[in-house]
Length: 195
Image (cartoon, rainbow, N blue to C red; front, top):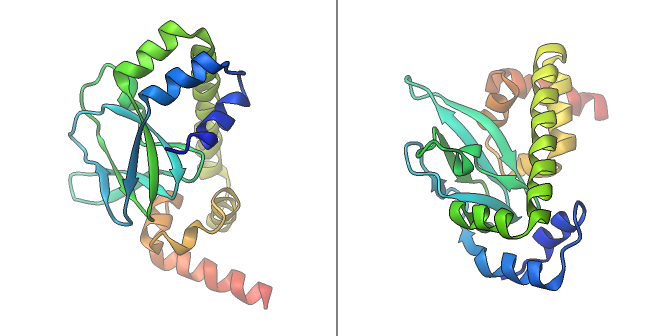
C-alpha cells in the first residue's frame, strides 16, 4: 500500500509522528477498483470513508424515476463517497462508482472513531477537512444559483482537469444541473472560441 498521498494531505494540516503514522497505516485498507465498478450501492451500510489514492470516482443519488443526480466527483488525493460513512445513519442514500481504474484507501468507521480518540491530531485534521468541505459545498451552491452554465462548466474543468475524458457527458451535465444537449452546445461554443 502506498500511503504517501494521504500522509501528505494530513501533514498539510497536522504533523504526524511515527507512532501516529504507523497506526493510521495499520488501519487503512487498500482497495483497487476498475472503471465502471460500483463501489458502494444506495441502501447499503456505509462502513468506510474513502480516500482516492489514484483514479476518479463519482457519487450520485438516484431518484424515484431512476434519474441519477451527481453529487460529487473525487480525484487523486481527495476524499470521496459520502458523509453517511461516519454518521449515525446505518445506510447510505448514495451510490459511488469508479470512473477510471484506480485505488482507494478505506478508513473503516470504527477505526476512524478509534483514530480520533487515541490521537487528537486526527480530530483536528478531520475537523479542518469537514470545515473545508462545508465551505466547498456552500460555494458550489452559490455557483449553481449565480453562475451561468458555461461558467459552471469552466469551473468544473478547472477543478477537475482532465476528468472529462473519463466522465460521460450526461454525468457532467447532471453535476452542472443542465441537460447533456446543452453541455454539448457549450463545449462546441468554447471550441469555436479557441479556434
